[in-house]
Image 1 (cartoon, rainbow, N blue to C red):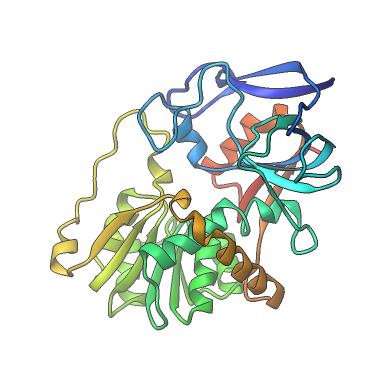
Image 2: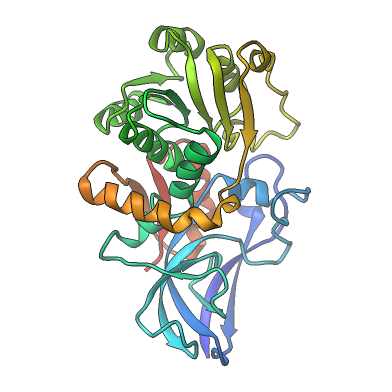
Length: 333
């Protein structure tokens, strides 16, 4: 029997989560049964989508229930196994939650090759964020060489990968990020232009740096920046709705886009998607991104916070305070 500490949802937050949102519990896990194995977790993913999972509303996934272990993707090592496909010592990733140990039957768990990239990268560029960037650009954005691609939250886990994928495809890439440090890093990894939304007029700057208009806009933030992009579309543009982090902690429903008639004027389309929509394309996407990492054409960056599962709540807040560059990960081992 293995003892584990884990974080559960104590109550649903109004606005930003705080200490009252979470509870810590220590429980004994049963030994793995037939077809099961025990994973020792070492890295926990922190993602903006987590805030939406706390709301008791209809969405693409059921909300995390009161008293349930907080949903999260993790990496870890198999330490005990009665499963024919998973051996002791295998490195794995899956949605096992904010916990030190987990028993699983292998559903939704995959082996990972840590010789290709470290565990944190398998939660970032080679994990859900990287696949989100890849599928959004290829399946929804229909990206092609020569496109002008604009990406909001460009220094984040999804945006930074999306920009580099677009650059590798032969696109002109414009990022929107907050603060000079993040903007400088985006230039270092190949973005053609970067707009600092904290210090520049995004609408005006988009007209300057994309004078012929935007072919693909990858939206991670919603709000005023989405409106600025809609005002600068090119005929036949594709707007990818990935997220709206600027509104996730609003206590009232945020207003919709004001410039949606640009979709009519420029014969453009705006489409939302989820990373889960293209499971049959995941393996090829990971293989391509692994090659780009090996060749140096894709820089995978993580902000790794070291601590324990009890640090999950305060680390999550870093996403909404802009403290991370690239993927935010909590390392617990």
